[in-house]
Image (cartoon, rainbow, N blue to C red; front, side, top):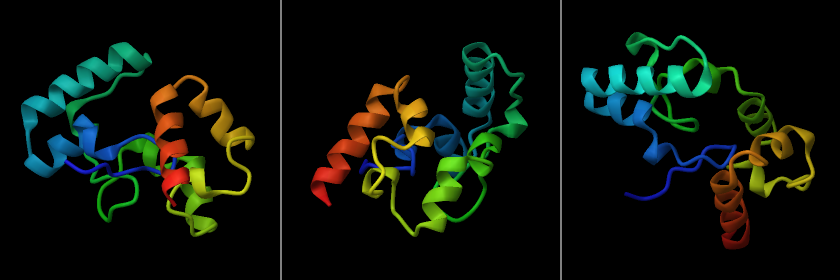
Length: 114
């Protein structure tokens, strides 16, 4: 499957919330909620696991709907943060990608390919 890059550099095509939403897969929603609850120390429920992808029309999972990176990218009409003149020094993205090396690598690769 082709990469579906979010503003932050995460690949929405690989996200289990998106997969569960597109396939209406209740078991994957429940498994994702349990895994994310343990990983992020937040009480996710299966009902919360609905998202079509950051830059795609439709449902957004809570943290993605409220994401400051998404809001900023939309306001600047950019496809992703890697295309911003402030990347990677912007405080918003720098804090995010320091803990997510794959997101940083995705943004850097997309920036080179632009």
